[in-house]
Length: 309
Image (cartoon, rainbow, N blue to C red):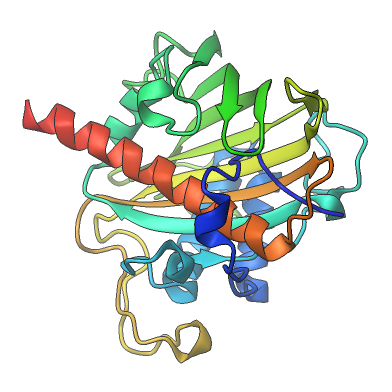
């Protein structure tokens, strides 16, 4: 049985009839896996990947929809090529259930970077209300103001919900990316990509677990988890519609990179096991996307409060 829980089932009963999000189209899958795979690569490659993903998010889902289900997709599983550069559990990647959720934030990427600098992350993590500590391995003193491009962290936390209480930890790395760098094919071989104009700063983060974790009663397990997360400015410098685009499933939404604030998206691949419980994949997908969206909302409310002071 495949189940999931890194963003765990806090309100299982309320989503008992949930259906899994629709499958992502191949273009979205390609952009997402490429973004995950190139995270540790050259900035020019990550910038290209994030631009492709930005476009596919706007075309693939209605990011202004009220229900998180209407802002969610089911991506394809990760491949061995995607995880080649990380230490991970020796588990089949196909056992990790995927879900991706997007939303809009009224705040620019920089305030979102400030959130990441807190040691205590419990104010913005509703499913870890008692303990979520971040240890900075690199970049603590320079990431927020972009005087360095990369930050590496270890995160120790307790996930607490109706099904399990489970302490675990994971790595999460962050990078600033200039989305106005040229396409990789336009950079002469052996030369460094240069943006001669104004930068367009976005953020990308990647997290992963390295081992299996058991719940306090040893009846629940987190076997593997991976995420990729992006913050892309809505400054009109990215995907802008000209009327020739076609949304997925003939959707009629019109959102693009204009409008201010930030496009946010998080994709999660995770495998957990619950002894003695029969939890369907549809319920797993529904609770996972709700957990992601609750985190989005908690961070947005936090920034709203700070902005109002």
